[in-house]
Length: 485
Image 1 (cartoon, rainbow, N blue to C red):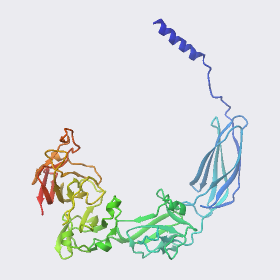
Image 2 (image 1 turned 45 degrees about the vertical axis):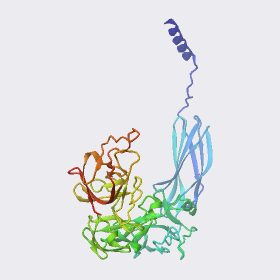
Image 3 (image 1 turned 90 degrees about the vertical axis):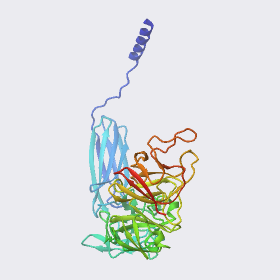
Image 4 (image 1 turned 135 degrees about the horizontal axis):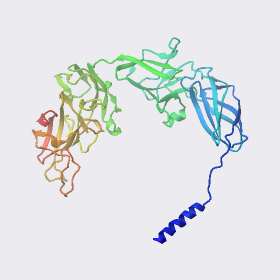
């Protein structure tokens, strides 16, 4: 016991004998600062503001100089400059970008704060520099690429003195477009980068360069509103950098030509490879309205079995609720797919996803993997009653190499596009087909391990090959299967 006490005492004495290291404390001090503006005027977005500053301290070493360059209430540049010893002198220069709410003649001010090592600060505001705006006497709505056909070769805007903005009317553009705003346009639809061009950087509208755009550091301006059928008016305020649009309010569609009204490779399909198989667009439908559809090979075989009722000839009746929908046409299978917008969740929508499923076309193909990359990989219900969802899908069941008593048809229901809001198969009674509704515990494979099929709906080994209408009723907790063909 004495041995341990002696060791502890020796350690304590060694610590006590160590020399103390403390920061040297200086007097409070008083940084004395003078500055001179070296620039009388700057062109926003092109020039820099320069000034000379000198700081002296008699008692206490200096620490730092904080610089803020401001135009009105907007901070356009900041920096903390390290200072040392008792004297600092430098000529400093800062670029003044062109941003929103920077009017002609606005004064450019330099806010300086000099601090010594004890934290004593001296402030100074430097004035005497006037800001000038780049000449924006004209403005063009320009396509982001020559090959971009949605807005043609571009459109010159006119100056509206009352609105103090550039305006363009009677455009008849699509309800979603991409563009750049440029001071100079060309008849060939090319942007002239030698004069100011506006685009987007980190969700901010600002002047951009060709180098930024080519490197994809700057993006086109996206103008869109699902409430519009077309964009007819674009207004650009060059002071606030605000762009507003107006247009023809969308009316429920009465006629669709899939070859002209649906776009190639619709952007809402996440897989680039899958996009190439479809034409698609957002379409505004009204409940129980008659819609004439042309451009498909055989409408009687191509119409969506859940959202449309075939009326004969080229007409269908739309069965869903009034609103915006994705309408996708899979060219190879000659089949139309109607989907509610992907941001909807419970109780407005339910999705079916799994393997052994396909759209109920006349030439169906079954999925071999799970996912939400394709309208042929997940299937959306129409809500036919409160908490009651109807799907019409192709179902194919074969052998399953991993399980003795289960087939390859394996699926699950979700309330969210892209996973989420899962239902558990074991909670539901299965009616019409021998489908296992599994619990959340999973099932055992042939090799004795537990599979990942927790809560899934899985077929038995009985063969299934056909078009089925599935009704999932959350009120009765049943899943009912009816063969259509």
